[in-house]
Length: 282
Image (cartoon, rainbow, N blue to C red; front, top):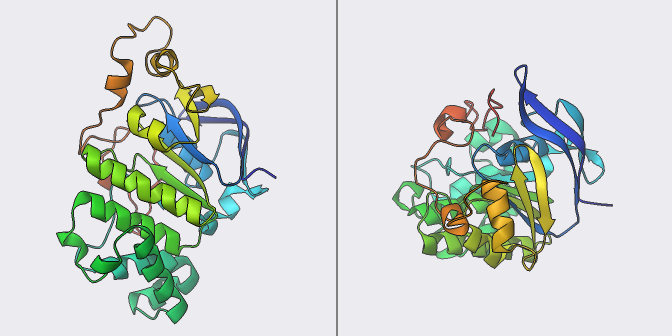
């Protein structure tokens, strides 16, 4: 059984803004899949529909044979922004991944089981931050914060790990570090992983399979060898594009840019710290 199945999925915002159009794709267990495409192509909507944060207008999305909306506790999510509690340690932030199991009150009072505490330490070790477990999150670098975000998602004990532009605000070295630890986590824990990226060179370094998204449709599905410069130009420029600098243009993403919905990340978060559905396509 595929880990993820999209069956004729269409997502329409408002009356006529199509974010996804008749998307049908399967992702196998243990695959490390990277979504590529220009801003507004539908990558973030793909992930939000998969994470149950928004619902398809038509079609079905299943994770392990069950509706995506019914298995949200089994889906770990890493966001472009870190969403850490700055005055808490890396260890305490990682522990918040157990919120779904423990409930808000127990988590607020830091009543965590020894099992959860071990899981948090093991997750921090996986992302290379065990020695920094006691460090306050607010004093960490952007790359370290994003690795704590990965650890938090791992403490959730997911079967599926998602990431939405997780390295967009990082320098190239930090970006490679984060992607390397994410790949390590997926490999060691036998997780299926799907992440969206703009940086094609980093995507090629870590991805096993690539889905090219443009205008809400999947126009490419292939391996690293299939991802040629012509394919990259088609994904980012489409027919009639100038084709110049396609890969270079795809490799850059500025820190602090709004997400594909036109909102800043902070504007798209509900009081519980989960990105809200919003009304714009991404």
